[in-house]
Amino acid sequence: MRTPQFYVWMAVSFLAILFIALAGTAHGQIAIHPMVGVHGDDSDSDQPIKEQETIRKSFTLPAGERSLDIDNVIGVIEVTGSQTDQVEVVVNKTMHAESKEKLEQARKDVTLDITQNGGELKLYVNGPFRCNCCCNDNCGHSDEHGNLRRPGVDLRYGCNNGCGHSGEHQGYSVRMDFQVQVPRNIALTLRTVNGGHVQVKDVTGKYCVRNVNGGIVMENVGGSGTARTVNGSVKVVFRENPRENSDFASINGSIDLYFVPNLSADFRFKTMNGGIFTDFPMTSLPAEPTKVERRDGKFVFRADRFTGGRVGSGGPEIKAENLNGSIRVLERHD
Image 1 (cartoon, rainbow, N blue to C red):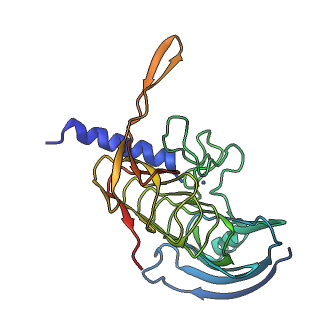
Image 2: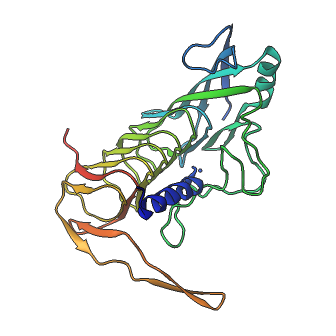
Image 3: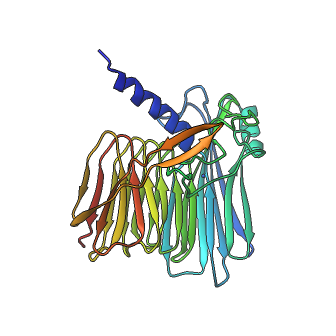
């Protein structure tokens, strides 16, 4: 028999997914390989027409502050840092369609929009599934109550006012898989929704990483920022411990954070169905005081449900929260 707690958990899961969903000159070479026939295991049999395209581009970023923003919908994102001043981009684009006419429509509808302004580079997968008229992307932030904040653009279902649509019934599907090499100290904003993971290696800049149906893996990273997904795990292995506040979250997945020795930080944890484990000696921090608001003539009390702990002499606040899964604060051993 299902208990009341079960229905509370289902309601929380549904609401959380809705509110987190996930936020120089270019020289390109394109190789197109059309393939007509029945799909393999990677496709829908209702869309037997397939075309693959490889897009290669190179961008030179000037010295100073540099940033890369990749806003994907379906497909993986893999970013690797190196000693370079250039951003090298390879995008493997796969289109499936019900007919040749639908394939041609997919070519026109779904585009990779690229803009560069000095050291800022943006790669944006655009199409009829987007809502471009009503929303902001609050990437990297929680609201004033510490709750997870979703980006204003729901990439799968459009905005709440109905200005967008998913494109599920367009008669085609388009996937873009990104492999990108970047300067090591670049700031990153990475988003995808379906179709795979987000992976980041060997970077030291600030980061904001989002996924919905897939995991996030960050290896040998410095800098500070946020990494959040809905269905998937979050794993971060630091080469340098964060010097600024950072937060990591999932709804359905574990969170594993590997820090280098001599860590000093203040942690805040919250999980519903999972444990919290640490390799570091930790002392308790007092709970945040209850906040009181007055709204429509009524008093509203908001309690902070995070558990606090201090490692070493304390330092930046590192927040880790999930609904289903364990949270582990581990020491990196090379």
